[in-house]
Amino acid sequence: MEQLKLKTIGQRIEAIRREKGLTQAEFARALGVSQSAVSKYLNNRLPPADVLLRMAQLGRTTMEWILTGEKAYWYAGKVEEETVAYDADLSLARSISRLPQDARQALVTLIHRLGATERDD
Image (cartoon, rainbow, N blue to C red; front, side, top):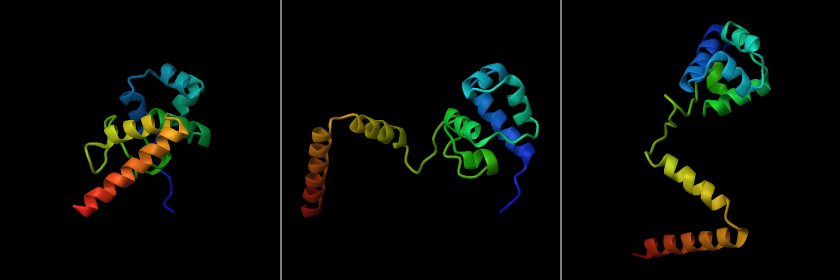
């Protein structure tokens, strides 16, 4: 495994902070850590796993991106996917997940029937 580069990890953490438009103090509060801890993370100290996870969630990215620069799933605050409909798909999936179980099942049945109709055409 490639050795982690603390300087570039700090740069990616700083990119998340700046993208969110937060001061170091605000970023620290959002992460549940002290401002001095954030300063250390920006200057060659590796955050603990739970803080890395909160950073990734705050930045809408992955812990892997923070640590390695790979598999970001975001750039400039936007999710990057193959299709431009990703955000709409995600919103729809969240809406469906909030439906009662019987309504979700009815929707799945409808989708399968519609798919069968398209194949028959």
